[in-house]
Length: 70
Image 1: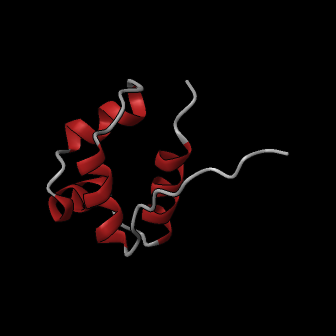
Image 2 (image 1 turned 45 degrees about the horizontal axis):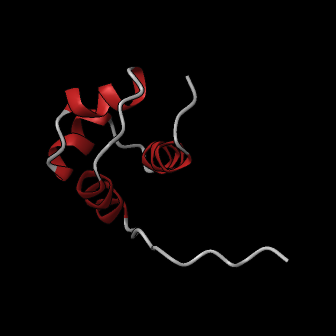
């Protein structure tokens, strides 16, 4: 199962900061079961949950318009 690049990056950052999923879950308000469903069942996280997790890790989600290919 291929995970979305945002999830892969978020998991890498979490591990680099040596945070367990349980601790991360408590601090972000996203349940461990919800996180497990993202990584184990391939369910897509909601934007609010992604933003909450990234915020705790010291990152933010940025939306920008794609540049047109020439």
